Image (tube, rainbow, N blue to C red; front, side, top):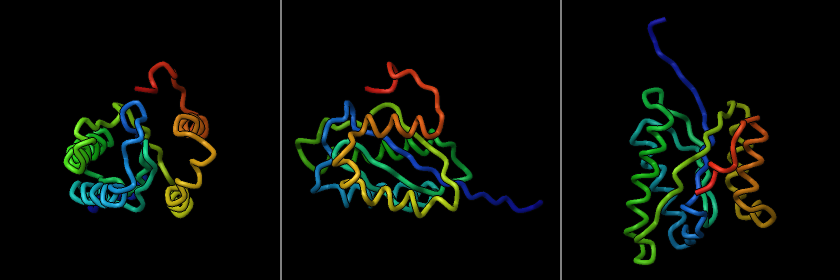
Length: 150
């Protein structure tokens, strides 16, 4: 086979450092657009980006040229720099060190898109930490809670 073809979708989740509610409404829409631009620049295809004050969800088609860790480092590094310039109260903004990246099948893209679009409603009844633990359970990922949070 001469042509290299890849279609891999990822649902990426990460929070602000110590889950501080720093993703203020005034910057959310522009932040999500900025993150979409970062993804496009590194050959990823942003499908849906959203979240609430303490975390973000990204659904994207992954680049076949970059490892997941490199994609995450670029998104977090570049967006953190941008956030710090948006408001003097955000000058010490940081993302958490870790992240979650979960594979999504093509047939699940629409459902994950809708899930990300409805974060405000969803988080009226569940906080980020509980939500993240449910993802780990759903994907049957073993973890040590001692190392999950920073």
